Length: 371
Image (tube, rainbow, N blue to C red; front, side, top):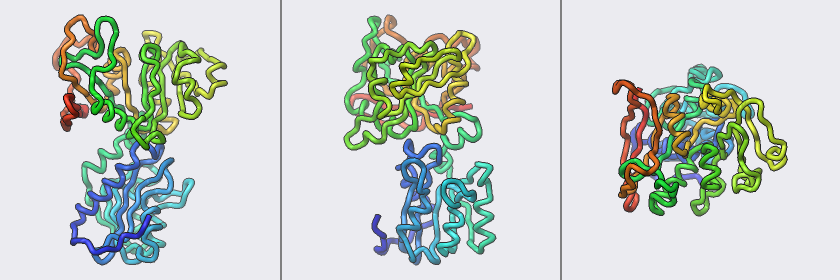
């Protein structure tokens, strides 16, 4: 990256942090198990360095920005979206890198609750004579909600993606579902895949649709997520496209304990055995814990109806990405959810709408869970 040293209008701390957040967003889905962090270095009103967490989680955003700025880091202010790390992992602490570069001030947008950081990064900077300011922004917390969920809930952030008609149907009575939404909406769905660490479907969807579960936007094949199938009894065919695509594109099959399939292993498929629920199927909470243990922070669940219902009933849905097509199938079509056994209205799962996007004739409504 080239150093940016052209004069720029005087900006506020909040505006520089907005830029850092925009940079951090570029890493979503591609940096797990680490958070995606953006960093902007400013000296004498000039942006002298920018960086964000790179694929695989390293280098960190601060290091990228420092490398770009070089000697211009001395005396600069660093705007970072998450508290700089203070521990030695596979790379030295970013807090120490900022100190060694001669940064005079650091503005932090969100604390890092990782026990190895959790205030230690800020204290390390302060002890070295670096002035630390906190300008906490909800957008910074939302951006790394997956990383925070893995730490605090021991499971990834779960986004349930739905594509339905106006009356909430996902297929005709004959099972036909391709395509309910148009090409613009489908492209937007592929962008969602690129922004998540992993994508999950149930075995029924895998058998019915034979999907690839990759990101097929031009130039973004490398942003394809880890593919995950919930397959309690290991029924996934060896000749399906998911298996044929492994190990070039990681495929994890979560099955019930007591099952194994050497033929899947031989084809590069990673099988993960977890506890079963009372219905004999893979317990969704156990599956989420297994994914978190492997570093997954952001999970996109694409269905179908049984999986979506199971995750919703288990209280595991943090966000909804609901694509609606302007059509009606009717009561004989397959509903997006099956029975949730809610006898009281007060037990209804409630979500808060965050935004609406018009995608050709279709609409994407984004929601977050409202506790």
